[in-house]
Length: 81
Image (cartoon, rainbow, N blue to C red; front, side, top):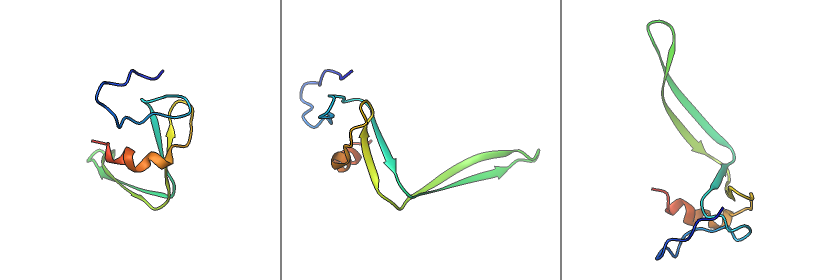
């Protein structure tokens, strides 16, 4: 369900197909994920951190109707805080 657009927010991303303005999916192709672990004295492992390298295309989709919104991806990335 689309939310009411707050007054003064002109650059809010809205899916043109269904009106969704809350949930979005970012899909990256050809991703290298490296995970770092520390082995504890009892032999178990603790996750330390991850490093991600995206080598392929990055797509953006509406989280409600799955419409391809990739042409909005640059604006989407600029608004992540």
